[in-house]
Image (cartoon, rainbow, N blue to C red):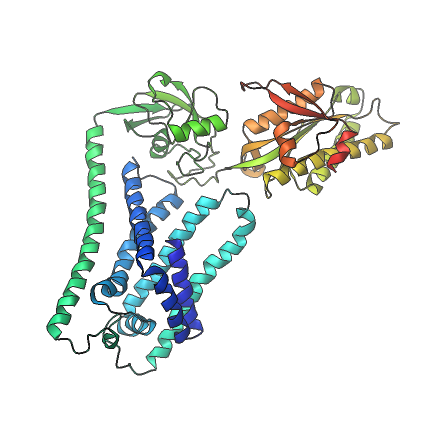
Length: 548
């Protein structure tokens, strides 16, 4: 459908060159879509799209949803109402009467004969294009390449409809000053000279027009009937479930009563309880996950979509996706990723920007024997030393293409791959580690007379999916990452201390970076919460130079 709309708008834009150019483009356009294959693809896609919208409306137990989801649904429902007239005046007349619509006939009809019709179709153009662009954005927004391509795609998304409308207006003004051609009738495509209707009796013509009108009202009635049927079924289901409700309890004491069959995410939205759902509740992310603390015995088992997501994130027993969990009895849940609500947030508005699930590399760095380094030293000396260390780590991270997340005591956390591929993120993290080691050695040489022992660092690096987003409160809200990948990276930093190693890197990170593992010691270590051990590589100061 989006391909059809894109080509259609591009064809309209050709009117900026000339009416003849647009007409030549229309011949190619109709050759693609007015044949059995093109027709089947286009109208099959339209039918499937409308069916999925109706199905989604029925399956949603509550119509309380984030603004962007509501906008997408409303625009989608407006489209048939806005374009049925146009479809009947072009495609249906072609199929029923053999009438060839041309750009001149259509633009005269919409610009001169019926300006309100022209305004309606201009609005329809913007509604359809906006609906499609929103869908594409939410489909692709978490792909690695999308952030780089987004500015170009946005430019295209703005320019194409603007050029199409300018082409329509430009040709309309030209046709206003020209006499009506003899082949032009009083509506779309009334070029009877090319279709054999010049000398047809008025009775035959009126009969054909009546058939077209019947087709138009049938389409309007069919769409309205389908919509009313969906809402009638929703009402019927609501009445049946009204006497069979369950309670979903939340950690702050909130209790939401919903009919049996509601998802936990729908219950949260209905109750105005902030709840992350980055993918919109489709089971494609894990941000809505909850820990079930009571009532787990009666829960239905996870279906394939939920099960695969839970396995991928290594979820603990009792963790479920709120969007896929449909309890049949009372339960108590604890959302594991809770949006920070600042002030009064209207129900379902989700004004707090949610995070996104992204494949990144994470580096943790800490000073060994910090207490021994700083004991019996003045506070100023400690601050000076820490600031020198922080500067080394921060500059190494930024110069290597990473983002410094935070300093925790004498430790630091950095993120890599936020604006690049996971593979590049892993290479950047390894490079940053090598630079940190090199610069710490230089600092030790500079402060050799001042330090009781040389500064030594322990670094842990891991990569994988993490939730990345702005978290915190007020002025201390910053971009950060949370999740199992972060926990494992922190654990590898501790392992580096335990093994008296400089850097401990997980095997997935080394593999993604495509680094040479020759002469690197490897071993398997146990990670709490994981059934399988994790293979890691131990990197010394000397062997880290290969990553620069």
